[in-house]
Image (cartoon, rainbow, N blue to C red; front, side, top):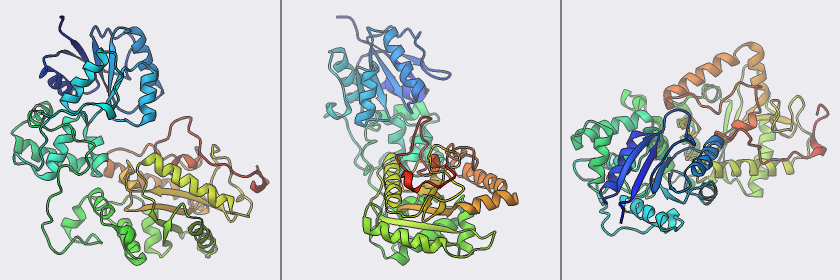
Length: 476
């Protein structure tokens, strides 16, 4: 019987070497095809029984390229190793030529089982992969690694790059790199491929879906962590993402309103927090923090609507910022899409109960560059934050929606201060995240609706919101 051949098609050498090492251990003949440039090409001659594809962030071109690759290699089974294993993503992959899908958390035994299954003509989904009794799983950090280092090594061995590890663990890329340097010293390795081989030999690389592995290290102090970052040098150097993650896990849902307000204030005052407008509003008592039980509850939304009307009626000077920060104990958004749906669902219900016409000078059309959300005849620019946001600047310990008075941005633009503030915020955000937020656009250049949830939406995205014609202003 001829030996099974597998082509590992990868963007990163790390994933390629890891997948090859995992399959080589089972006697599978592998070769590496590194993808350079914008993406897959249909003229790749795979020349293998199976191709294992590294699949990261899909876009429209990538879907088309996958279909073309399948058409050009009809006898090769395509097994996709994907970061996205929800039902919708799996269905799209199978519809475009994939024979099966494994999660990026798949162990070496799972990957080999997936290869065997697609060769046999069986469709592979992550939920039906067979567990391996020989897949040794470290139950506690070992080999000299700390709990955090062991967790990061596990993710490295699963093929995740540093930026995705940072997003998953709610840490900065700098923090991840610091942990990796310490892990390398403990493992006595110098390169990432060496670290992958070291980890795979010790059972790492198959536990990405287990958020409780490895077990958290015991606290080193009985005094507990402080709600507010202190002013000493060590605390100022402490990473904002680490602090936010600690607060998100601190059970704030059950805290009283004063404690939650303190945490939100501490977040805004943190030395690394990038939004200068929020900090200015807080310092000048222009930021009002209010806590609500449930953003899906009609009674809570009635109270929110009334309090926003009172907030908008406060007289302010031309350079005074006003921000109404609504913090919700429930629900906790599981990911960015769920938060986006929660946010727009709340806005739709607020709009449905609003008797006032749409604010003048702004559009109710969510695709218009002149769109702004209107409530009580007052336009607001919204900023959504939640614990699972991919951008650190869009994270908060609890689900949070900031209602900023739209007119203050117009006043800033008229005074010539908008560009300076925008540029300063972008520099701080880039220093925090390592890149400029792709969601942020110049005020008035595109619809601000695309920015509300903080998710980097698709080009053809449309807000799940309908403005009632009877409430549209006369300008539209």
